[in-house]
Image (cartoon, rainbow, N blue to C red; front, side, top):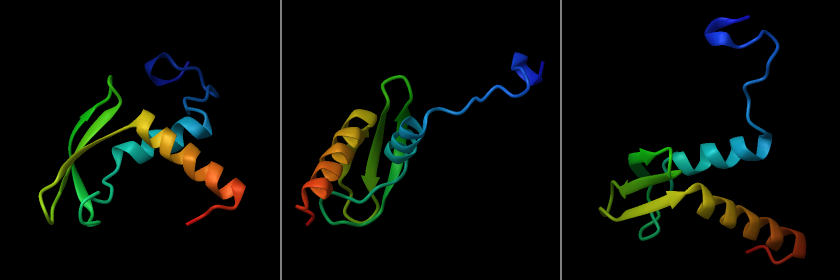
Length: 85
């Protein structure tokens, strides 16, 4: 048994798709108003939401795992259909 009761060789990693969306919604993103890089003000891991604020114009917005997954699915659908912007 390893540290904290985990057996050696047990993988603590989440599936690839979960890791991708988890990392993305918690990272600072682009401001929907001016496009500048924002900062993360607060993270709610239970609700899987993050509050962001723009350093440039002061706009506040919320991003969540669910919203990020929807955006990714929409982008993937556009790419498969050949409707990329």
